[in-house]
Length: 298
Image 1 (cartoon, rainbow, N blue to C red):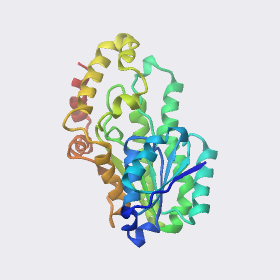
Image 2 (cartoon, rainbow, N blue to C red):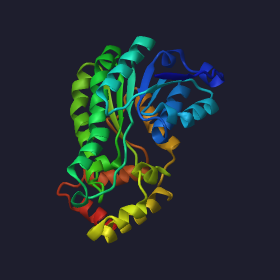
Image 3 (tube, one colour):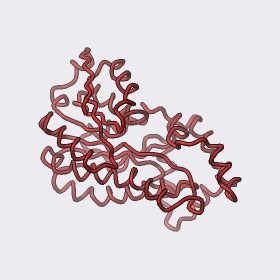
Image 4 (cartoon, rainbow, N blue to C red):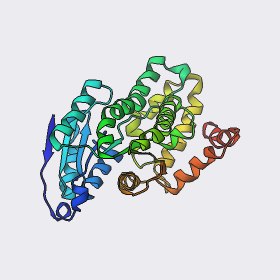
C-alpha cells in the first residue's frame, strides 16, 4: 500500500540534483525520531519512502510533511512480517529504480524483569527490535550494494549500557549493535557504509513507547514494586529534563549519517548520550556501569 503526499514548495525545489536522485527507505515513521527523520531527509532532497506498520496511523506524518512542504512516499511495512518487508523493498526498487539508503528505526520500548514475564514476552521484544532490523537489512543489502549506499540503524544508549528493567529491550539493542558492528567491515568491502545512531532520552517517548500505564507496571511488579517505582520516577524525570532531546534534534545525527562523506560507525545524538555511553566503552571490568545504574532502583 502506498499513499503519497504531493506538496511541491520551494524547499523541495532547492534540493540538490544529486541528493534528489537518491532514494531512502525509513522504517517506523508514524511518530518520534522516525517521523522527524523522514521529514528531514525529504527536506535534504532525498526521495523519501516513509514506512509505517499501520497506514491508518500516518496522519501525523502526512501533516508534518505538508507543514514542511515536502513530498513523502508513505508505504506499509511491518518489520515482523518477512513478506511485508520483501514486498516493500522490492516495490520501492520497482517504482523508484534504486535504493540508496535505509534507516532501520522501527522498534518498541519494553519495561519488565524476567521473573515477572514470560520468555515469549522477551521473544516478542527481540522480534521487533532485533529480528526486524535483520529482516530489513537482508532485503535491502543487494540494492544498497548496487548503489554503494548507506545502512543506518537507530539503536539506543541502551544498546551500550544495560539498564534496570530493560533486560529484554537492552538485549535486543545489544544484539543490534553486535550485528551491525560485525557487518560494517563486510559491507564496506562491497561499498556500503554502516552506522548506528544512539539516542538518549527523547521528550515524550518513554511513556508512549512503554505502551502501558506506569502505575500498572508498579502494581504488577510484586517484590520488585519499590525498585520499579524508583526506576520509573527517575526515568520520567530524565525524559522531561534538560538532557532530553526533541525528536527533531535526535533526527539530525541520523540525517548526518546519511549525508556525511565519512560517517562514523557509532554516533551518539547528544553530549549526554556520549558521556553516558563512554562509561561502558571504557569500563573494562563492568564496575563503572554497575555503579552508574545501581542507584536507579534504590
